[in-house]
Image 1 (cartoon, chains in turn cyan, green):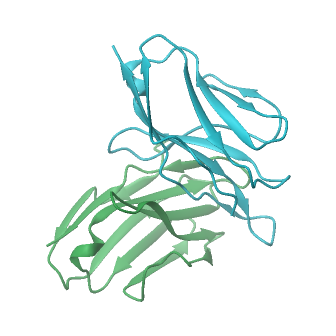
Image 2 (cartoon, rainbow over the protein chains, first blue to last red; image 1 turned 120 degrees about the vertical axis):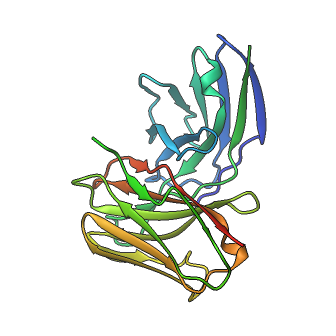
Length: 114
Length: 112
């Protein structure tokens, strides 16, 4: 499994952009990078995913470096409700190619301060 | 769409009792996952099914744990006998082929 490394915690001021880094230096060419978040006591929630191009949706932007060894999740205007643990995950595809599982690490606790 | 449904939401039991957790995946999803979350170990994948067939159960801690998926709309995770170290939040997630995973609200299990 390709491993990911994230800082254990980060702080961000409300209204500012939150930039959450992730290192995945052993990622393979066909492995996707996924981001999920978990707000206290709730189930994890999908945010965004990408392979090699930058991606943007209504929640966030994902910037993947050209060598694919790291990525950054950007929440453009963080709110207090964005306080959560953010997980960067490399999607592992099983040998059959049709199934895959998500293995969660410890993630980054993002605290958005007023 | 009701999302992934888990029951019960909270379960308190005594050591040695059998515990059954239930999950109803989102209609049309063909993959189902059981996770366990504790402070010490974080979020661990226990087992996952594809088209009702168990694909990978390498995360199941020991023989006391068993999971079944008798049809596409229902799965159970059973612990027999339960032990205090099984106390955790158990999440069920489902996914359509090639799409994102959706998680349920979890079942908080306390074994006394």
